[in-house]
Image 1 (cartoon, rainbow, N blue to C red):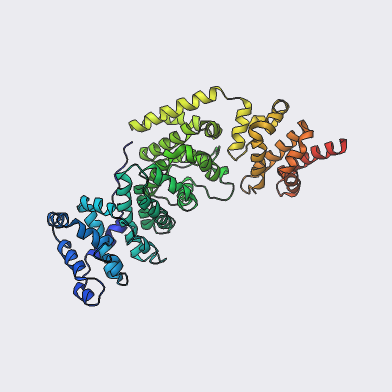
Image 2 (image 1 turned 30 degrees about the horizontal axis):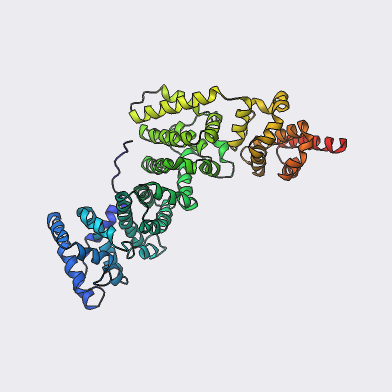
Length: 480
């Protein structure tokens, strides 16, 4: 899949240019012992010279320049030696990126160093001040080097396993910054690191730090806040939304976040269940697909859904049907779309969901609704025949997963969508009515206590349905 060309963030380019233009009193730094004569000699040989001369100089002394940047038998790296001179550290960090870009053989030799990131990693923790350029410039250096390392071998490398967690932590702090320039850098550098399965797995293992802020950006773009019942604004909304983006999320940032999530989706088998449970991902992506302002964002949304749904068919396809993804895909098919990757993924998803819906039963529809984490007054809830035919299966299927999910839904406040609580109480009442001998199973899940609590809810429909459910419990209590 081809992706849009990503230029270096303006914020970063401007910072680097400012630092390149600063005069550094190198000779004074040598006299003060901040750097050595050898450091200075090598820096001056490649600083502010033509690219051809820089390449020739470095390739003629690769071990010396590896030692300059990473340390070695000759002594400390220039970053370690000058650690108290922030002006020199900033200058060297910018120069390092320039050298890596200009001389590919240097990055290859650096990666071969026994500890290539040792001089850089401590600088990520130089300060917690977002205005301090040293951690930011360090992250750029490390992202360059680690991404080259990840691309150079298919096998996990200990050096990368050590560097990725602190680097992800720092970059994820940028994605949460209020400054859009810093957010842009954080997201783009994360994307550069998700080069192979190992880097994606580590990224996922840190999902509270890494994935959650990105989901927050996508929720803002979809017009939903994370209030414990956000699905109410994402599922089955009948009001037409204005095309465009909510929450002040710019198109470029949206694209870059979607690109990161698409890269992560190649680990679909690993992340599918949890990304849905933790983030109501299918609901979110369905809403984003409705609002998608450009083909390039639609393409990434469809490609990500394809990766996740095709590797988690049993768990995620029912939810996709419940949130009306098939109808949305039909709507998309009627538009004048030209991107071949987009059209191919649209066809694949449409056919996969059509095949699934042909085999769906009413029980499957009800189970999908529960698993989505959101309830609406769909036909099964009010149908006595449905409960007579399916109550036992609901309690027994997948070791009682459905009543557990019902209990989980009812624990939330649903302040923005009280009907969910009313529907949940309705369902509990039907289960007790049809299978009174299984009341203990429901009580152990806390459902009796919760339904009784809801008798005092402010919403009339919730009070009524909870009263009916408690009435079923009391009826069978007295009968027994």
